[in-house]
Amino acid sequence: MPEETPTQSLLQRYAEHAGHDAVDQLRQLAGLLNGLRVVHVNSTRQGGGVAEILEWMVPLMRELGLDASWEVIEGTEDFFATTKSFHNALQGKSLRIPDRLLQVYEEVNANNAERLRPLLEEADIVFIHDPQPAPLLNLCPGRRGKWIWRCHIDLSHPFRPVWRHLRRFVTPYDASIFSLDAFVQPLPHPVFLIPPSIDPLSEKNIPLPEEEVRGVLQEFNIDPDRPTIVQISRFDRFKDPIGVIQAYLLAQQFFPSLQLVLAGGTAADDPEGAVVLEEVREAAQGNPNIHVLSSGHYSDRTINALQTGADIVLQKSTREGFGLTVTEAMWKGKPVIGGNTGGIRLQLINHTTGFLVDTPEGAAMRIRYLLFDRPRMAQMGHNARELARQSFLITRHLREYLTLMVAQIHGSEDRIELG
Amino acid sequence: MVEFAIKDCAIAGIATGRRAQTLREIRDMLRDIHPGCIYHHFWGTLLRPHFSSREYNNDFAAWCHDALHDNIAAERLAVVDPADYADIEELRQELLEVIDMRLDETDVVLFSRSDQQFHFVRGAIVVFDTTRRLADPSELPRVLPELSVGSIFYHFIDARGRDPIGMDDLRSWLMGFGSTYEAVIDDLAEVDPYFESLFVLRDRLTDLFTRHLGNGAI
Image (cartoon, rainbow over the protein chains, first blue to last red):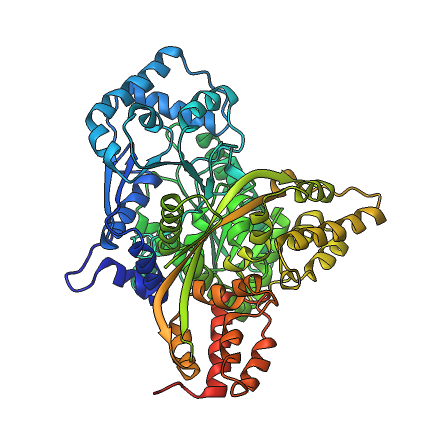
């Protein structure tokens, strides 16, 4: 969570990045919700994208005058194993979950409901994040507020039996939120679309001193004075790291000094990751200008330095969720060459903030073009940063949450005129 | 003289779950799609990020170009100006006409990729009063840069859908001062809001008012 200085509120600090007009607008919108009791519920206080969002969202809601709080459900090992299976199945993996574990899922939620019921039933708005706490709604029959299910998962191709099981818990909600329209499953209530965002005050996105950036590059034997392209992502086939190497090798014929950095990890629960990493190492073998950084966890600050030190950032995925690494690169003023898929298409304005590509050859051509036309590369980087500032910072994210809350409190009309 | 009440707005997109992969499917869905979707894909799209190189002024045209690669349909849909129609139903009929004409003249059925389908989205728009009031147009050069892009959208773009003759709020207000601001009104009429971001539009309007009215110091 960003540290608050005694003299400057969080909102003031965000205003320096997002603009005072954006923060003024948040204050105006929040004024319509003053004192509203808002509770967020998820399954972990630390780690993972949801906790990262709530770490900034709850304090900002409080500063805006909402009575916001964040509750975490407590579970057993079996419970989390079950919800992990839920997660994988909802993203398309064919997984049968035994009835015994489905029962554990419901029992753990029932136990948490005993503890949380007074708070949740009194709240004006309750946000339930992801499938883990979804059954809580049915366990709070005296609820008086609006309940919203926030789905952070791509539900576009779920394993149907598991989705059918979960759907009965989320159907009674007043609304739900998905990150992209392509991720949505039909539900009998309004389904809001709120893309994710990045935090400009986080370690991953704050501006770093040039010396620190150079130091990190040198630590990995990357020459800070030579052109560098970077892809930050897990070693996963859908991120197409082999395609990135192919693109690099094609471009390197024209720019022999070019360096490639592929940095990421493999998820502990993804056995294929190790196989992909091995293939990447093999493809990179013998080329001293290809740096495969895969040894465990890199700090957010290290990732920041690698992105900042790059001339061009690639995200050549063949399938992608939202692709926050694209947003992070744009925020650092880098043109992005991205796969023509998923949320990358939403973020990347072709020929303006970077290029959308479908093949390694396409990526190679765009790398060559940008390295050839440096002023154009700088202009695209500038455009990318401006686009990230306007549309993908947490102030926009929060504005959409506030808008949704106003819409829920004041009825279901398409147009709500207040004041 | 009547004060100008500055309002602001914010939109949250709502998925309908309906999606199309061909022009014919779009046409069939347009017949009964929620009117809020048509509003959203014409007007609401302007609240989304884009730069001055924006090629098409509505999502239907952009999708025909980007996903179907049907430039004839894209170009014809792009010239549909929503402000020309009295209401969304008239606009809906015009869209159906344009698409039917295109379907009549070609036997080729173009499909989008499955991950590039047209998703019908509608918007929940919340309009709220900033409580800020302008007594005189000379305040505009100073005030405009401080407004949110939501305010710019509401007064300069959304207003065209609310006003029976498609007039934005700024011109409507200035006309109340008789012939005093005729030159400004004429210049404002030539500002096409469809091709640039709201941030650039805000700068353009600020420049325009500064040119006519000075820096607004009072």
